[in-house]
Structures are given as structure tokens and as C-alpha cells.
Image (tube, helix red, strand yellow):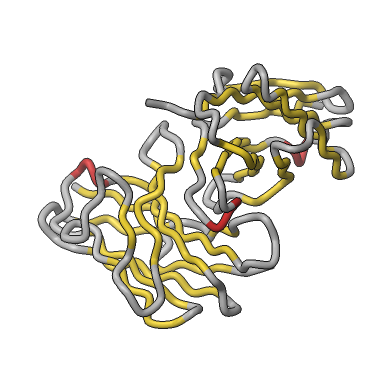
Length: 114
Length: 114
């Protein structure tokens, strides 16, 4: 049972445009959400997070939106840069934030083209 | 933040053998975790490594197959025992420092079992 889903395995965006990566979840107990970026042969790197008490969190070019009623979150990257090309994972946790189990989606491979 | 290293970075092993993966953090951390990423899959939590006591395993993972040690607050090992080709995966160590709401990940150990 995949509790966190990223339905787009890949996305191609032109440099300078907006990248929108989507994530859906089924477990209503999730109350903390994170986005990680992963380059080949490296571990996931934390990008941005959001608590369920918020519906938006922004950090530079990265903004995460949370729609609790739809059990949906999205990551916006504006403007997209070639260095953003990587696999992006969304993850979710319950109760104790990231002191406990993270449940990951299957990832979306973002390709930013020139 | 925390910087995490893993050894080995990759290995090719024969079925029936065992491999121990080491995870070293550059500072004392509250929690350490072991994840597995099978080909084309998301990251799945194997267990929480508890300092000074037995690890806490997720459903589907057992101590006999994945024994874990955590002798102190900066180091942990995961052993993959009696390996089969189905154990071919990337194994990742992560840590939670208690100070920031994210888990930091090591670069992963890429294991191929023949």
C-alpha cells in the first residue's frame, strides 16, 4: 500500500520556467511533509518542509503548498535552473516529526533543459 | 546539520554471504535510521537504530536478516545476512539531530548480489 504517491515519474522543464512537482498521500495521520532532492550516487538532500498547520512554506526559489482536504502537496521551483535536474522525493511523517519514520514517494525525475 | 559517511560505497556479493555496512556521523545525533531503496522503488525504512539497545524493526524486516548495532551516538552498522539477489538495493543511513526538522542522509551503499 503506497501511502505517498508521486504519479509523474519524470518532468522536463525549460530553464527559467516554473517546475511543479506533485505528491499525494492517503494517510490522514501524516502531519509533516518534506521534499528531498537526490543526485545519482548521492544520498537525498533536504530541500524544504511543511507542517500540517500551514498551507505554504517558502525558501528562496522553492515553495511547498499543502492542501490537506485534497491530501495533496506540491513543490514549485521558480526559476528552474539546470542544476535542479535531479530526482525529487516527497516524504511524510506522523506525530513526532522527523524523529520517526519517513514514508517516501517513488520520486519524480526533473530535467531542466537549456 | 550532520555529515554522514557510509562504507562501503558499493559492493558485489555472492548469494549466501553477509555484508556489514558502516555509518558514521560527524556529530552526536539523537536518532539513526536505516532505509532501503530497491530498484525503481521508493525509500523504505528498515529499522530505527537505538543506542545501547536492540533496534526497532518495521513490518517485513527482521533482526536475523538485518542485524543492526549502534554502540554510540555517532556510529551504526547494518548487516545484510544470507544474501539473495532480492537484497540487491541501495542501503541508506540517516540521522536526526534533534535540532532541525529533517533527517540527514548518507550517500548510500549500492549492493549487488549475484
